[in-house]
Structure formats: C-alpha cells, structure tokens
Length: 119
Image (cartoon, rainbow, N blue to C red; front, side):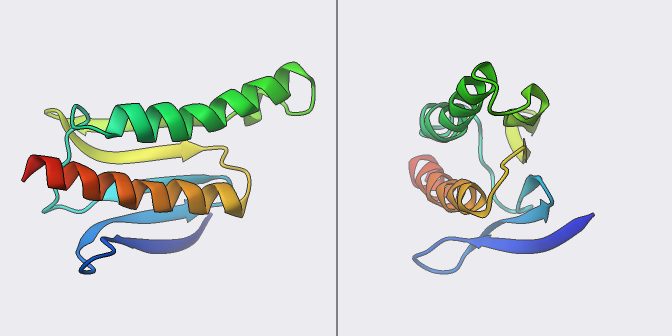
C-alpha cells in the first residue's frame, strides 16, 4: 500500500530530479525522464551506496547478529539501470522516518553533485 509520493527537487532552483514512492517500509526513487544519471558518476557509488545505504545496512546486520533485529528486516536496496543509466532505486527496510528522510535528502544532494560532474 502506497503512503505518499514526494518530489525530489534540486535545492538551488527547484529542478525536478525524480519522485519518491513511499510505502510502509520501502521507498522507490524514480529518476525524472529528462535527468540522465549514470551509476559510474561520483559520488553515487562511494557516497550514496557505500556510505549512506551501506552504512545503514551495516548497522542493521550488526543488530541482526545481536538478535535485536530480524534478518529479513535488514536494509536492502536495488538499483534498476538501463544502458548504464539509473532508472530507479528501491530501498527496502528503511524502518523509520528519520532514515527515510536521510535517504531522500542524501539522494537529492548526490543527484545534484552527479549532474554537476556530468555538465
């Protein structure tokens, strides 16, 4: 069941980067049609995937090992690409509003930096 849709806009000028479809415990970030982002463009892999999503996943795995979190609740993510171009990012198991907000705000920051590097 979908809870809400949230537009992801560049801070400086309100340019639409994509839209988040937010569900109970997962979020799908769809990149806007006219925005071309490649997973090879920094800081996507190093920062967004490695530090942010990887960091959350690491925390979850630690909690699961300690028995404080069920293994099937550990954060997972999937990147859908088409010809090297990112189409969507699905994050499952964000678990709380603070994490959701961090994922979305970091996605906006990351996508903005990626567009600057591609320009």
